[in-house]
Image (tube, rainbow, N blue to C red; front, side):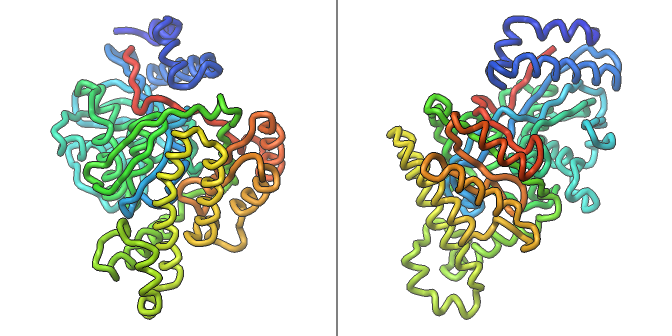
Length: 425
């Protein structure tokens, strides 16, 4: 048995400090050591001394290109970020899960029944049960655990708190009962299934793949069972740019129907051409049949389909610009993507009385036009905008945004090179 004091001392080891620098960046070492220490203390206070303790982390993600393309087998450009879901966790001798997440009521559930529960839709319980079911089906051992959890990926922030939590849960069961060597594609697929079938949100695979893979990646979902992941190397900071997300205060919590309508409407257009998804259909094909399609398909669905086609074509252009170090062209493509989302995908606001994201984009354009780039971030309707801000202008940018949307609304992101990570103590 080890106590919390002994484990906290391990955080001062050179190898541990280097691990934390890798995950969070040099400037975050002291803060992360204290954060990890606090979790270790909380775990002992909640569950007593334990023989084994693991600290398991999974990152949030930033979507850089490919807004609402993954659910129709499109292409995306995304990155894991240095905000994460983190837990201190130990194994139990039965199938009970004790899950104490900071700021929420403790969860107690049994993994003896791994079937979806209608009463758990939209809850963390559903994700725990769904991830365990997926791992068992994939041939991995599962069991109960005692966990205390914290997250810097705020719910509704647009950085995918749910994907970070799901991928963290795959890491928990992998660390406790397996070898912590699960392929990241499988981590992502299990996480997505938990969100779709257990939680009840029909998300694509972008969020989970970016969290599980780590780093800057472009992913082609042409074959959703075998997505093609290509790691990329590009250091925006060295080019003098900060990635800043601005949280405008809205929450995704009650927007499931709005999100579900986007892939559903896109697939109405695909069905017209005898396909299940839009991938492979061209703008020319749509234009040739518009009159006929408008008899049975809404104009909004058609606009969303045009967005998909152009956005899917835009991602390879963005990747090409990065590979050629053509940052100017890349920033132009980011702005094009944002305008397409606003005008055609129509995911910037759900209620005409609350247009906080629209206002954030308006402010960003005034501040960054000719210097940087701005666009809706992630699912949309609420949450955040993504901004590429010249570092010399970052302080002024944050000041203007915080004046409008409140102190702490901006997060300056670093790209995290790893997905799920585990520190054994």
